[in-house]
Length: 220
Image (cartoon, rainbow, N blue to C red):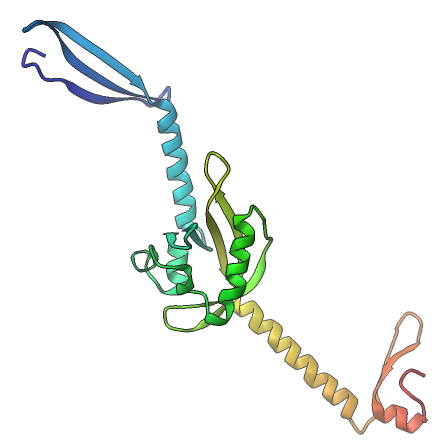
């Protein structure tokens, strides 16, 4: 105080969850310092918001799903660790880039249409799509897009949660291929085959060979 300078410090009351900024400055009367002016600013509400933001950031970064934030110009603004692993781009490489970085060319028109819908306040449940990795591989993903609002409820960006479902799609395709093979064998076999409802004993399906042998059409 006697030097004429002011000082400022932070005071945290962890037990009471209070946060203050304390400023002390000299009180001058003419050229003389006659005392001190103490200013205490309560910023507890900001500290609470900061804790909430830090917790949310931790949840996003530790998520197993790729979480991507983008602004209204479709530039990537956040890119979590799971997005790095899934798409192969580091956060440094992705942030600031257009989202077309990971959208295949044949998907861009549909993606832009979806964004326009959300920017008008719409909402979409999960849907499946395709993304392109840094290595150029195409992967199947389950996507959830949600608008990001400011305090006046204006859309200022988009949040995307994307999950790799390539393995599930591969299993589904293998099951479909197996079913096609079975149906080909069933209908083209030289032996007679039919399917019977176990509860009624009624024939619900039969192959062409059985129809030929019985002289009946399948719908009979």
